[in-house]
Image 1 (tube, rainbow, N blue to C red):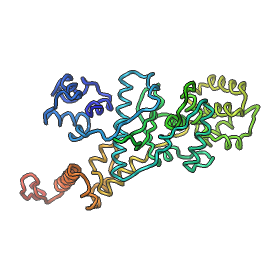
Image 2: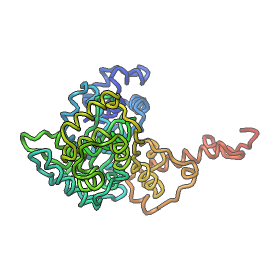
Image 3: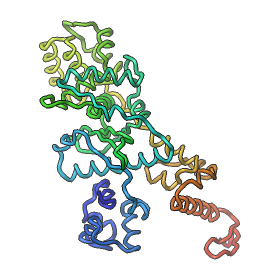
Image 4: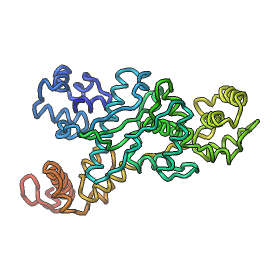
Length: 392
């Protein structure tokens, strides 16, 4: 995807809206030509275009470093074409940024679970895949306290989007020029309860690791995987027994807190494992509808917050691998005390590309200019003259 188009779509801007944001400097027809590589903008237009898109001018011409492949892309079909394009652009941009940061920090991970997907002929076969992944990741059979952290530790990036209610999530993988998987992504809608968020993330993980055969519904298989991954059969049976004639609301709430997933998904899990009967499950479905709990359950859990990007950017900043401007352009605020005095790693600095070193020096110059302008006695950085506090 053309870089200008990617950045425009990621911000949800039409060509008309972008032209307006640039103050009418160019027409939408001209912008369309830039996106199709039919013409190149002048330096003035490039700077105005970059400002309207919230990036540095040089970022408009970065060559894509990864290719992003969406898994179960048909799940976006319920959305309008513009929203589909926006979501794709947001995920493209976010995954590319994270892969670039991974490379600069020397972070690698094995993604054999993507290259060797688990083939399933029926949804219930996803149980074995969930157990296998938990074992491979040394998760045992207990509940998972921080699903987001577990995914991020394995370079499966958790992305939160502001999206329409019809959007539940989507998964993707980023590959390098040789086709090797560099990272994965599981995406969910922002501002939903933690119990729903965790189920969505586990569901998207299911899409990444499963390969349903013809005749096996991929959504059913991914849902079964998510239930088994978050609520292992062995642990659930130990908690409530192998068969139940009846189950109380208080128990359901306790299990919700224990496993961090919704009452509705817990009930479905019990049905799949034949802990409760079909009639008992239907009774609770009617009760849930009657109480209005389909959209908002009692005691919604707080959502988990992704932290990988914040931690890694601050680490890269401290090591001189990225600049303050780059860090803030990726949405991470730099503590003022850190921005004022960052240690200089000369070896790391000299290993950086010339363009990046130039940007870092420009950023430091801007910081020094601001420092001297705010001080009492200083050189006028524009004229070279010395000014005291009163004349300033």
